[in-house]
Length: 401
Image 1 (cartoon, rainbow, N blue to C red):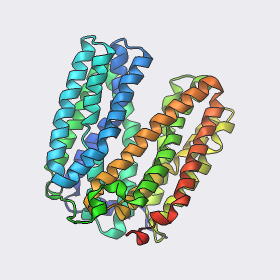
Image 2: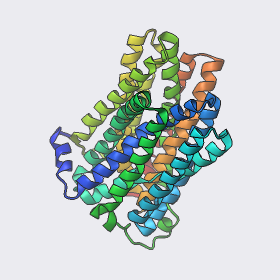
Image 3: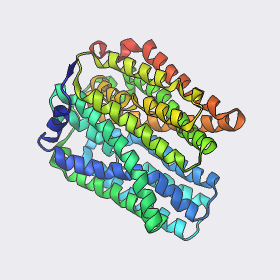
Image 4: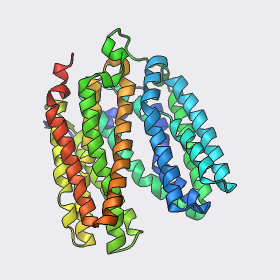
């Protein structure tokens, strides 16, 4: 391992053709950070109960996860431009209809139906960006590129909710949702107009496994299973952190705890991506997944907000490195003809795991305690590590058929 620091990130920004892609992806990712809170605030302003809000918001998230692999496979077949323009248009129309229905006081059923449409049509900008990095930078820069990708997401998931809350307070909840909706589609159109994106095509090939899709590869299945369990731990923490803050201080204090969680992840990602790694990606994935599991262990033991805040920062240090190493592994393991689809499966792992983890934590908080819920997080992350260890041979790119 060679420490080379910030210069590796600056080199990414100098890559030919990268800036139009970054501007488009940053715009879309800012909307990702805003969407959930803006939707919740808008639905609450429409006087829906929390149970109804959860149903509509959860439906949108699950719809995104359900269609992501299909959209990824479609990108691999017809290119990025048509898919991004089509999904950006449908998502904008569906979201606008959802906004209008909420303002008009529609019931939960039509709101859920429109949320499903809008969520299912979410433009697959993140998988497209990750599929383009190997064409933008040299192979030895890819680990830094994927770390940079993960850090961006963390940044926008810190800034996005703050922006959504600010617009909702200064103008209205509906304005916050409309802003997020517009940013998502405009960003997708900007990304799709970039020359590198327009010219991108998946590598041609006739391999049967590749034609069967990304999940035909054993290593991808192992990786997705491990990441799903890791995301389950994150879903547990989303509820556990909020519940701990409400019990020890106030609901509002959950906001800065989540921000600290993101700061920890960004710090870990900056450290990880600022180095030239000689260790193979499969071994790095095992290492950072183990660090994630260990970092979650102390959380149930915190007895005060200051101690818990410090532990939250520590628990976030491995998040971006896990994501970045997962991106690297997908790039090495996925069939070239199914690269975008493979990156989309990582989104499915996150959405599905987080949803189950949040549900599990909610049940445990109500039935047992906050500490018991927080204790589920290291168990889930540890299970993800065990899955990766059991399938470690399939994760080694050198053993790929």
